[in-house]
Amino acid sequence: MASETLGYICAAIAVLFFGTNFIPVKKFDAGDGMFFQLWMCLGILIISFPVQIYRGWPEFQPFAMWGGFLWCTGNIMSVITIQSVGMSIGLLVWGATNMIMGWASGKFGLFGLISDPIDDAQLNYVGVGVALLALALYILIEPTKEEEEESDDSQIHDPVGTISLGKPLLESVGDEDDYLESSTAKKSNPSSSSSSSSSGKTFINKLSPPQKRIAGILMALVMGTLFGCGFDPAQYLMDNIKRDNDDKYPDDDVMARSLDPDPLDYVFSHLVGIFASSVFYYVLYLMYCGGYRNSYKLPALRLPAVISGMMWAVAQVCWFVANGALGFTTSFPIITSGPGLVAAICGITLFGEIKGTRNFVVLTLAFTCTVTADALIVMSR
Image 1: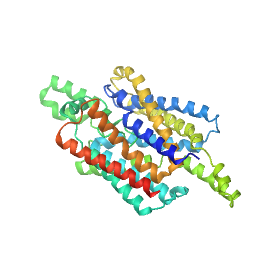
Image 2: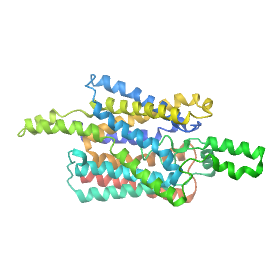
Image 3: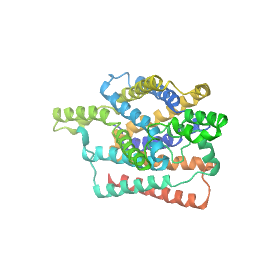
Image 4: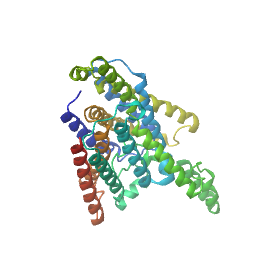
C-alpha cells in the first residue's frame, strides 16, 4: 500500500498531465476526432508496458478491462453531447457527474467497493462542494476572439483543461459533409443553400432545440457516470482481495494490509481495455460512416496524438496510485478539479488565450476555490 505522501504526489502529477496532455495536438486539425482518438489510445497502450514490466508482469485481469471500456464509451459520446448542448454545459454536467460518481463510489461503497474511511465527513462534503464550484468557475472563462476563430477551424481547443478526463473529441466535432454539400450547392445554385444545408443533418441536428438540450444533458450525465465508474472494475477486484486478507488475519491488521494488492498490477488490463475499445469503435466507425472524407489531412496528427495519449496515460497511472493511497473520496475531487487550473495557467503563459479583467477575476476565484477544496478534503482525512 502506497503512503499518503506518495498518493498526494501522484495526485499532483495527475493534475499536471491531465491539464497539459492536449498541448501537443493543439495546432493540428483533428478531423472528426475518431482518427485522433485511435492514435491517442495507442499512446495510452504504450505506457502500459513499462508499468507491467516494472511490476514483473502480474496476471492479466480481463474484468479490469471493463473500466477502459467505460471510459472509451463515454469519450465517444462527447461528440454528440457537444453538438447538443455546447462545450460549456457539456463539460460542466459530465465533469461534475464524474467527480460526484467517483467520490460517491468511495464514500458509500457503491458497486461492492469498500467505503473509504473519513475522519470528518462534513468537512469532506464541504470540500467536494467547493470543488464543484471551482469546476463551474473554470467553465466561465472565455477564450479570446482569436482562440474562438481557431476553434471554428476544427482545431482542438480546451479552455478548461481535461476536467472530464476524456475529451479528445471536443473540438473535432464537425459536419464536414454538410459543409461541402452546402458549399457545392451554393456555387451551383445560390437559391438552394437553405435546403442543401439541411439535407445532410445528423439525427441530433434534426431534433428541436428543447429535445437537443434534453438529449445532450442526459448523455452528459451518462458520460460523467461512465467516467466516474472507470476505476470501479479494478477497484472491485482489489477490494475482494482485501476482504479475503481481512478474513485470513482478523486480528493482525498489519499482516492483512501487507498482502493487499498493488493498484499498478491492474493498470495494464485497464489501459488495454481502453485501446481495445478504441479499435472496436473505430472499426464500427469505418463500417458505418466510411471514415473521414478529408482523411488525407490526418497523418501528421499521429505522433502528436500518441504523445498526448502517453501523457494522459501517465496521469491515469498516477491516479491509480492516488486511489490506492488516498481513496476515491480524496483523489477524485482533487484530480478532477485541478487540471482546469493547470490548463488556465498554460493558456495565459504559453498561448495568451486568457485575457481581460473578467477572465482574471473568474480565474482568481476558481484558483481560490480549488486550493480551498483541496485543503478541506485533505483535512477531512
